[in-house]
Image (tube, rainbow, N blue to C red; front, side, top):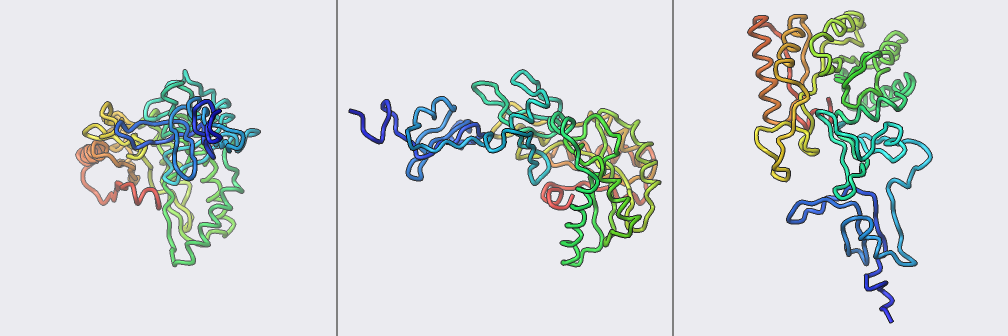
Length: 327
């Protein structure tokens, strides 16, 4: 007779967790989709089919996807570079195992089955956010109000919002299309006297539109002249983040020696964008983390200065820790 802690020769787990994205930290730095736990210790790690062999009558099975099954779910990471979505959101976006990751983005998939795990990084987030409804003006106003209360408690009188989205913006928005009503929300709050701190914003650029988008951004900035709400320049994501393997490096990642990451912009297009924006006296706010991406940004700044001459431009590159918490 089999031992009562075993079934078909396999140990019976107290709990198993399936449909996950699990970094095992083993010698090969491999990933898994499921784990089994007994008495507070891992007893199996691997595919769902393998780990499921440890299911017994009293085993608790936890599916992260099963938490919400009747509506699409998209959760953004704190750093703004990754979304976690459920199966319904993947289906709405038409993302399957055959969907190719877009340039500058990653659709993470199970290494054995190829099925999307629900982790979507960088530009791939547009596939999700462009089919889900954006936040309403009132929802954004509520978030702004909560932020102003918290800022007032510590004496902050001016804040920078780097992710202003033109309401009709399309194309590559790095998954921030859900915020396309934020300019309207700030504008209405300024007009109604509801802003208690000064807000200075920069408008998110689209790498697929190149320098042709600058005139629309010049117009948007010119229309916002309220003392408490103004648009002052453009926001440019040159690359992603180190944690997700989307930052652009000069040398390959230690755990992914096949890649250095990739930039979101072609070098010449970035230079043209910087020169055009600088000529219009727009401040350029850069997100660049990897050393190769920072080099691209510096080369583009140098190009803009050479074309337009030196001025008090105050362009800036924001490193990751600051960018995550303050933008």
